[in-house]
Image: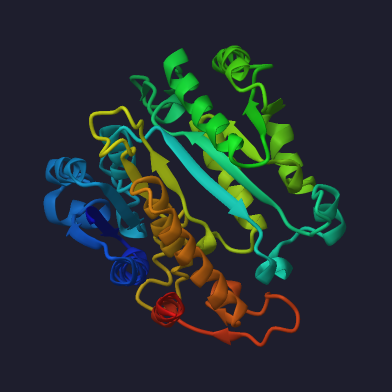
Length: 377
């Protein structure tokens, strides 16, 4: 099979972590008989420098014609003083809206190889794990194209007061909830809706929609938490969670918090998915935008020390969700785990691995090459 992939390396460490990921995809292609064609595009700070816009129209229109999009990172200190509409991060919002990828899936799993990197004590982790292991495995489903990030905003005439508006429709909420419930069907059949329904009217609408949608999934245990309590519970007992569904803003915050519990933000992938019924869907598969959850990290750019595993694992999610290649996705994930089993560590996860493992600190390129070599075996 041939697949077209829109490739946006972006800024900072973006190009450095994208390169190993494409190497892994090419190895998958050689091993399983697929061809991945990459179309490199500009977005973010580099696009501002070359075109004056964070998201050139050509980038968005070309990405729409591809089967999926793989992104490195955008942003950097040199663009921080630009007005909001010209900031590199506006490219992300434009891509999400333009591609119709409304549901962001962010898995947060504590790998046994990195247990000592988690700041939570064993007894806390054990209290939420029925298998008696100091681990957790949860999925945050974040609504991605609505809410506060896309609502009306502005300032008064004097510029000394500002406002941002959170608006949600039943349609936006329901489709996000259904993504969460469908995911829970294949996991541990638990879903927690996180909101602020004691204060926000939009959150009350989320609860009303959940009460209706839950009836279609009688096998799923549904619970509710306010965002402040959820943030605390994620620290106190992450093992209690399976699937968390929440709004754009709350999902942004909770997923970053969850990443800290796994040991390094550099380890975590993400998938932003549209509807399989959307005009941009290909062969019944949703349009997908895949990226690691870390930022552009300009302070370490060009030093060959960034962790590429988050991007490599994002490529695995692309194989799974956009291309339906489950066997290939698992092979990539197993190769990444095998690299950690062998004691390979980038600097962000070094000296905090499982006791008894002889660690070998490697750079971005070497970690990518190791995953490729293990994938070839």
